[in-house]
Length: 321
Image (tube, rainbow, N blue to C red; front, top):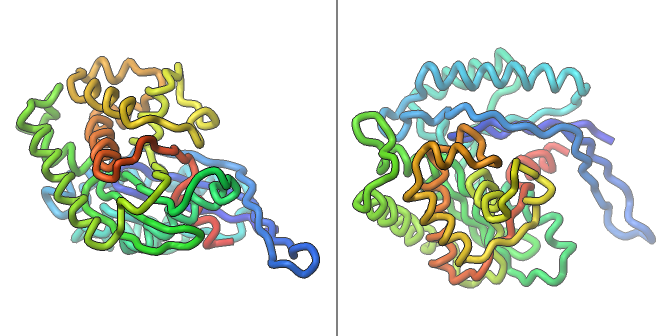
């Protein structure tokens, strides 16, 4: 057994998973099997990508929020006696001119260098994390289309047991909000019709780009990952508070996603903040994230999305193990 830790630092949040990995020989000479037992999973909204789309740099206050979360995670990692740690950084730190400052800060706190991975690597990790369990459910037809809607980018991966095609495009809940829904430094609340139309056009252009590489319409099961998707699931189920067990492997119809998205786009900050399952850090960006999900479902013709709480973080942990 090996105790591992995985950290995923994205545009909007930084997350930690601590798990025990056990590898055992298969019966009768069959291949080895592995099991990942979760010990600790947590998430902090740090908005590392604040302003990156506009300035090309990581803001000092965003870096400090991220480093504060890293210090908290370092204590958890020490408490659990972790043997191996991998820190992966995604969209915001790929785009920033001053990412060396970010790298130095993480190394000082955690003793490991953050790997600023490509969008294609990000997609591979997301697919592994999301589908390893799904493979046990034979009733879910393949191939899968895994979509990981992040803060700065969205990853699209089509595969059966292994990845067939993957693409990352620069459309995410934070990037779309900052690009289209902010006026004079404030989020328009609710957005105008023109703002929504511009955001939708940007998302559709990104889907065109993704479809050049990934056969989106060939997939038979759509699997949705990350906070925008899980929050839409919580809203769809009318959960009084965020409940990971209820959200994991839940299914939401396209009509229900459309209904929720349309409501989010015409709601006020106060109305969204009043949702019991809504993380405060998602209140201003959830409408954009939901619109990305709806656009994907309409483009692919998916009647429903299977929601997974297991995602890139689990894929990183498997890679460490």
